[in-house]
Structure formats: structure tokens, C-alpha cells
Image (cartoon, rainbow, N blue to C red; front, side, top):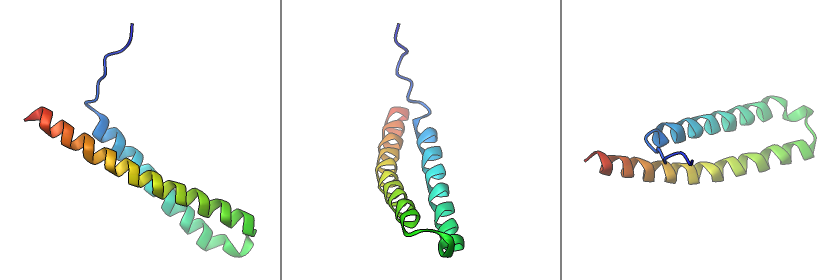
Length: 77
């Protein structure tokens, strides 16, 4: 039997994902800044590409977070 759709914690879960993604993004930027003189061009490009994907993900996650927060507030009204 399928589990019922429990979306009560979606806002908190999405916020946790956003926080974690922002942390990873900042840590990778700090890492590049500290070690760029010892990294190959390919390594730098890989990290930059991954950070670009993280930034795109953040845009989508933040939009989804806003939607979920709006939905939750309407359900609680």
C-alpha cells in the first residue's frame, strides 16, 4: 500500500537543502581561492561548472520553497 502524501515538513526539508547547497557553494569558492595556484585548468573548470549547477539548483529550490510556504500558510488559514 502506498504511503499517504505527507507534505507537512516540506518547507523545513527544502530549507535544509538550500542551506546545505549554499554551504557547499561557499566552501568550494573558498577552496578555489585558497588552492587555485595548485589546481589544473580542468579542475578549476570542473568546480566552476559544478557551482553553476548549484546556483541553478538554488534558484529552483528557492522557488519551490516559496510555493510550499504559500501552500502551507493557505492550508493553515
